[in-house]
Amino acid sequence: MLDRLQSFLNQHRRVLLTTHENPDGDGIGACLALAHYLRFLGKEPRIVVSPSVPGNLRWLDTEGWIEPYDPARVHAELAVWPDAWLLVDASEPRRLGLMHPVFEATKAPRACLDHHLKEAPKGFEAEFTDPKATASGELVYDLAAPRMGLPLPVAMAEAIYASLISDTGNFRFSNSTGKVHRMAAELIEQGVQPARSYQRIYLQDTPSKVKLWGRALERMELLSDGRFGLLVISLEDMKAFGATHDDLDELVQQPTRLASVEVAGLLYETEDGLIKLSLRSKEAVDVNAVCKLFGGGGHRLASGAKLDGPMQAAKTRVVAAVSARLEQDLSRIKVEQKDVQTSVPIPH
Ligand SMILES: [Mn+2]
Image (cartoon, rainbow, N blue to C red; front, side):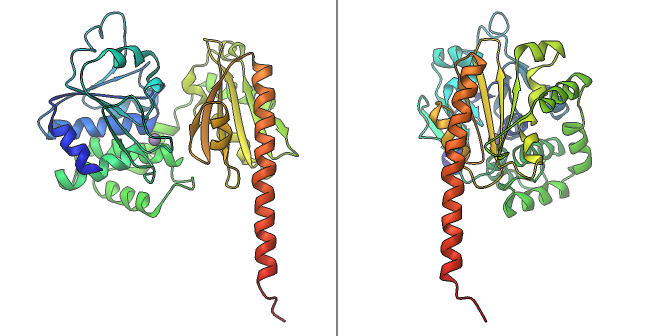
């Protein structure tokens, strides 16, 4: 796959890198690392994201590569500038959000680089996906490190490290593979300072964010005998605290702090009247299957979808779907455990 990606890059000079709307640390880190690599190859990289780069990731952009998407003025030429598009950390064109129309209007070949578990990507001339990878940044490292030779420039190593910590929850999630840890070790040897990266990416909250989280947690609902912890945020809540979309990052994880919770959920209202759903599972429950019911997707333990409003109707559908999936997956585990117990001879 990486050889195919390399030959795709070889064929184009002006490469437009972008990621899904409301970019995260993996999308941004992988785009920046790719930009470093493309410059090394003598190419002309450009990164445009919608709506903009989150404040806690801005320090990674040491070259000032990232442009916030502006459909009206600055980016009128975007359909014609690139020789190729590369959508990073997503494999569904609609995830470009506001940039989707210009993506559809371009004549340049379009490709995606992604690690999400989805059906085969549609709407691209080329696709580079590997669901075994933990982060898009991991794929960029595998591509660039052997071809550039170590050490990588520190800013590039920091961008890849940001990808890894973003998609592993700072090496807490089940996708924190041995390979990811070995990669992190190599990046540290190339100049990454883990405490510095952690502080700059994670310890950047604003009072409005902490207060919004407080409101959400205060109203948390414990459903399905305490196994489903659900948080709900309305547009009114967002306005009351002057909060932004970035302030919701990682909020969905919070109910999993409770011992009883197997599935954590966040429902929040967006300006366009849709309800966004995020689900996280500790281990046993396949929340990707739930999100697929609503036309969304992601990973088995972390997934999302968009539902029609109003909130109460969306919530009813989500609660029913999650509780059904909880029953199904937890009863299967009980059966498996029983099988194990009866098949193992009890020593005397
Ligand atoms: Mn990712």
